[in-house]
Image 1 (cartoon, rainbow, N blue to C red):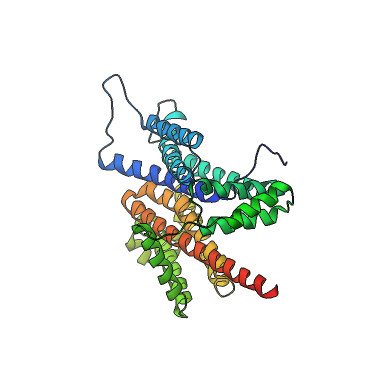
Image 2 (image 1 turned 90 degrees about the horizontal axis):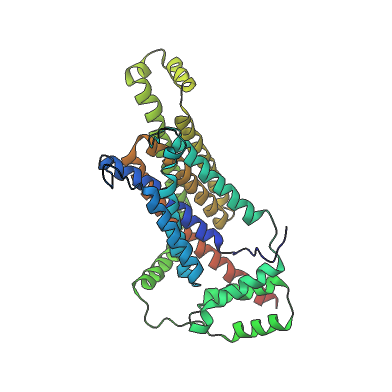
Length: 361
């Protein structure tokens, strides 16, 4: 159903990812902190200030920021605050689905998992269910130009705005005027780049350099394969080695012991195995696509890491807090690296398409 009241933001996936990753991080960090500090309480004999209230405050701050500010940086900070707030809120779900307010209610982790999956399904439906309309392309082109009045429009935003405007198909006086404004706007120069900009340029140069070598693709395959095998080995060890015992596994009835253990696996253990296998299939798909399209392969690797963050490590954390936190931090770093690589490949593809267009013209 098309509506002028619900115009999608084409950059929303970036903000949703920040929201979800920070929400998962909040859940894991809170559980680790409470475990290390022996579950302290803020309050008195009569009062207990539950951390659900802090989650509400963070979400309130996120909403106020979205209502007050227009910049993309405000959107990023709002996504981060909202995700931390939502994770802090949903972490206490056990208290509000049990009569005795049991924070340690075991299915609570399953409910948190289902909540994140439903959010992902809803987001994917909104993003892909309906085709992008001409109106959405036009308004997103306008949205890219927020930086023009304050001389803060960079070259990437300028090219993206022109691309959206072209895809909108509009030829009204407004669209023509808008196109002239964009084409005549000079992107901001960077005469004195800060530390972040210098670091980003350095990383771009290194990325362009290292991807020119043939061993780069092989290195990617080895890295993600080892990552998957390490996670799967760890889960199998927790489930079978420590669940059955090394002595029984060495015996002649090892197969029977494993089959018996499989029949008694809990939901958490089954979810660990299933999510790690899904992550592995995505890695296999990425390896297959690597020789055809690096961008599509990166997207598969990214999905594998997201499955690991949103599913596998949530369940690992249920049993092993320290190892889950280490794995989460590692996966977030990998996700950041993949986001960087995807952006570089998108820019490279845009340059190639532009050269091809200029050649044909």
